[in-house]
Length: 464
Image (cartoon, rainbow, N blue to C red; front, side):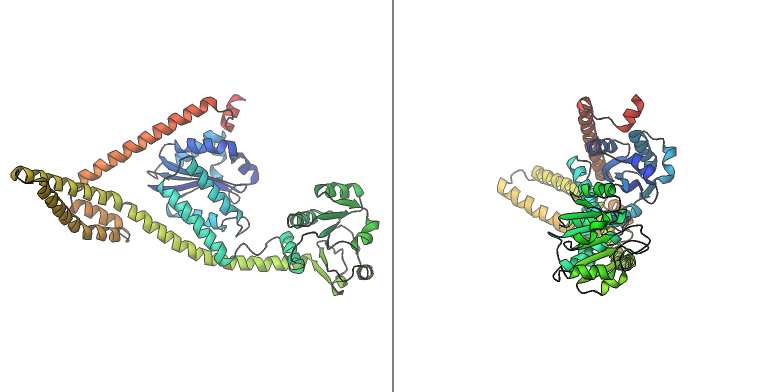
C-alpha cells in the first residue's frame, strides 16, 4: 500500500484557478464516496480550504494512480485535465507523508505558522471517518499529524506572534489596555488598512466605532459595518475626548492632528491612555504627539518592524518544527514496516495451529483409550510447547521488520517457515473482504443518487 496526495494550492495555482476546484459542504460527502470508488483507491481524505484542495489516498500500486486521480478531478469538476495539469502536484510515499505534516503544522501555509489549517485537517479526517473512507493507514497518519501539530504549536508558540500590520496593532493595544472590552475606536480616513484593523479590534471586544472622514457618505458606509457613528472632520477633536484608540489613514498632504491639538484634548481626558496608530504615508499624526504623557503613538514603520521581528521568530520556530517532522516521519516509517509483520505472524500461527491439530488427531487415533481429562492436559502442554517455540522467532521478526532491510527479512522468514500457502490464503480472504466492502459502498452510493438533489459541477456542465 502507498500513500499519495494530489492537489493545487496558493503556490501552484492563482485564485482564478483554485476557485474552480473547491468542494462545497454539500458536495464533499458525495465526493469522498466517489473518490473511494476510483480505481486503485483503498482509502481517502479530502482537505479543502481557500488556499488548497488536496486529495489524500492510499493505493495498492503507485503505477497509474496519478492518471486515475486526474480522471476523478476532471470528471468531478468538469474541467479538462489540460487546463489544470500544470497547476497540479502529486506526491507519493515519503514526500506525501512529509507534505501532510507540513500542512497540519502550518509550515505550508501562506502565513507561516497559522493555526486554522490544523482544525481544517482534523475536520477533514473526521468527515472521512464518518463516511468510512479511511482505514488504518490514513487514520494513523492523520492522527499522528494532528497530534504533532498541536505539540508543535504548544512547544514553539509559532502562532502567537502576529505577522500582519493590523494584527500587530491589535496586539500592541492589548499591552496597553489588557482588554478591549468597552473600548471606543475612532477611524480617521476610512482606508482599507484602518478598516481591517478595526475589524480585529471589534472582534476583540471594542464596542463603539466612530468614523471620521472628509466625505460623510463614505464615513457612513464604513460606520454601518460596525454599527458605528459617522461624522465629518470638523468634529474630530470633539470625539477625541472620549475615544481610547485612534487609527488614521487618510490621503492628506499635511498633518491631520498636531501635538498642540492633542495636548489640549488630553487636559479633558483625566489621564486616560490614548492609543494612536498612524498607517498613512505621508503621516497623518505629528510624531511629536508620542512625547505626550499617556499617549502611545505608532506609525506603519513601527508596526512593520514588529511584524518582521515576529516573522523571524516564526521562522526560528519553523526550524524546530522541521526537526520534529523528521522524527515523526521516522516513527511513521517504522510503524508501516511493522504492518507487514502481522500477516506473516498470522500465517505462522495458522500453520502451527494446523500442525498441532493434526498431531492431536493422530494421537487420539493411536491412543483411543485416553479420557477427556488426559486429552485436555496433553492438548494444553503441546500447545504450550508450540507457543514457546514460536515466541522468539515472532519477537525477532518484529524487530527485523522495523530495520532498514525489513522487507527482505519478511521474505526470508516466509521462505524459512514455508508460509507461502498460508500467505496466499490470507491475501485471497483480504481481497474478498475488500471487494465485498467496495460493492456494498457502491450499492449505498447508487441508492443515494436516486434521492440526491444537488448536482456536481460536471453534471451541471453536461446539462447546460
